Amino acid sequence: MVVCEGIREKIYFETLADESRGVKVEILAPVGEDEGKSAPKWLLDRVAKYEDKNRIKADDQVWFVLDIDRWTSEAIYTIYQECKTKENRLTAISNPCFEVWLYNHFAAAHLTGFDTCSQLKQAIHRQISGGYKAEVFTKDIDQACETSKTADTDTKHFLPAPLHTKVYQLYEAIKPFLKRI
Image 1 (cartoon, rainbow, N blue to C red):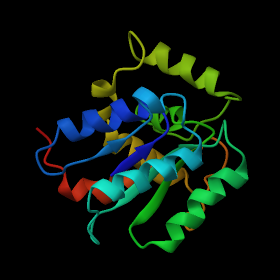
Image 2: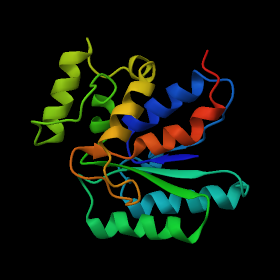
Image 3: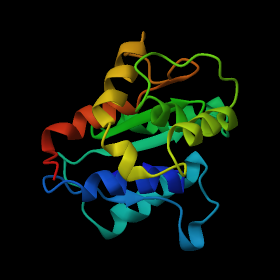
């Protein structure tokens, strides 16, 4: 299960799951009445509601895909603490935003020269004709994984350094189950 705070992340992981016949990814993102409720506490609430209605098996994984650009470190730490209480709960955090992960799809080296998420979004729009298209990015997911993993100098810490991402850890967890079309 991928629990994400934004629509861009939701579309990305749905596209990845749709391109596969080997893994089912349940996406919990803020839609409908939950639109605008993307703070970490709402993500935890969304998982709790899902668990009340559905059974999460011991071998299922629940991944929280988070950015740190809009939330306090205390809010992010709350999710991390929740994940530590259950073996199958994990985080995939980008610092400051999901666009770090997206940029790594076409960058063979670590990011430099960016100060804001807005700058990253603009750089992505310059690289990809028409801007964000999840199906374009997911084709280069192995590149993103390699770039992100190589740049991660502290793999044990749950928070990535500025302009780094831990989303590669989620991809590595599901990659063995993906049977790309």
